[in-house]
Amino acid sequence: MTGPTFLERLHALCERQPDKVALIFLPEEGDGERLAERQAITYGELERLVRRGMAFLQAKGVEKGDRVALQLPKSLPFIILHLAVMRLEAISLPLNPGYPPRELLYFLDDAQAKLFFAADTARSALSPLLADLGSLEETIYLDTANGAALAALLAPYDPAQAASLPIPQERDATCLMIYTSGTTGRPKGAELTHGNLTANLDALHEAWGWREDDVLLHVLPIFHVHGLIVALHGALHAGATALLLPSFDARRTLQLLQDERCTVFMGVPAIHRRLVEVEGAAGYDLSHMRLLTSGSDRLPDDLFHRFRETFGHTLLERYGMSETGMLISNPLHGERRVGSVGLPLPGVEVRIVDPETEAPLPDGEVGAVQVRGANVCKGYWRQPEKTAEAFTADGWLRTGDLGLREPDGYITLKGRSKDLVISGGYNVYPPEVELVLASHPAVAASAVIGCPDPQWGERVTAVIVPKAGSAPTAREIIAYCRERLVSYKAPRQVIFVEALPRNALGKVQKAALRETICG
Ligand code: MCA
Image (tube, rainbow, N blue to C red; front, side, top):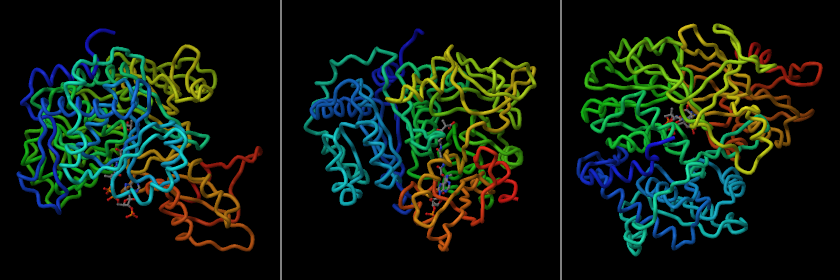
């Protein structure tokens, strides 16, 4: 692989266009959206802040390979610290601010995080719990709502001190860890390297025609690959400008896309659905936009058509996963085929194989989707056996999705071989929820499935056999899960049954259950 890495490229952009605005942070709507309250950061300021951040992290003892966890809202401190960690050859570990303490502790412990940044508002809940965490040397609480807090934190540190540090050169070194769950229920950290990020960003740059004069409206969370790599890194890699909304609001999004003359927007189907449902949606002028993408969940055909009818833009559907970044995309120019995720991105190999023998299948036959390329992660953090299970001997990653290739190369996904529910673009692994349900004193057995849902795509549904003599309520079960799991993983629906359908080996037959329960 040749060419600069993502961090080298970003550094060069900061030197070349220091006065260009890189990031604009928009306040929550209630805060009163006036120009003066926006915070604009130029590429030059970004570089200076990242260097200060590096000097600060060095003073905290952060070294190559250390894990630094960030459970912060979408904010400037998050982005500066994230970039500074990666520039120091350490590993950034972004975490959903919605994780309840129980989930959070698992991630910090499993990753053996050395330093942890959390929101100031979480201090009283977290500080007693973190005291016993072996690897954790320090937790730093930050007031991210107050722009001055970061400046105050970093002020004593000299950006010149970090200026002499080389930009990381080792492409195989892990720089980012994203936790994903799996069939065993325990989330595992996918280790993404500098080389992975670079390969993915270069491929998307070429495929989607990113330009320096692009303006991205960013509404996604930044603790996942979609919002962090594809959207935020994508804009920075292009030297473009990203306008960041702290959270998604459909009407405001349309207003901003129109008024700010944004050129790029990325969303999940649940977001696009809300956009078309805004009253008077078709009246917003989005004619200046050049790219609107959809991912993280299958784009329903009706939404594909409705979006085009409403806004005059054809959504570009693409497919990716945490372990690989983006793999397959409909083309920027050419046919964006409804129901298909498109063609493999430059440098990404995709094959469809027989799920049993793993022999490649001819076009048109449904099989398991496997992927290989410089974008694919090197494995799971400290889980060599899980890594070995995920890859074939010749280095293909088993995605867990089923699909077929059309004779002209377009790939269409046809379901999953893994047990997974996708709710509003978030992956929910049933075993993780079932593990929590199993710990409830009134639950004898449970199975978690996804039922079709007009808002979320799939609704997390718990089917429960209560213990003899107990009569739990749905409300109780949901509350119990919410205490232990981030809210989108908690069931939205609970159904009580006398028995679960099982096969001869005692395994719950989820397909049969979906048929009877989801109707
Ligand atoms: C929010 N809620 C949800 C979800 N989101 N429930 C189920 N599924 C969800 N996805 C619930 C909250 O628990 C809360 O419930 C209520 O909805 C309102 O919460 P709020 O935060 O206001 O929700 P929202 O702002 O309306 O969020 C909807 C959303 C969000 C904007 C669609 O879910 C979202 O940003 N999704 C995108 C996820 C994403 O970026 N995925 C990428 C990962 P209550 O009121 O009862 O407490 S996948 C990825 O990265 C791969 C690589 C890829 O290919 O992209």
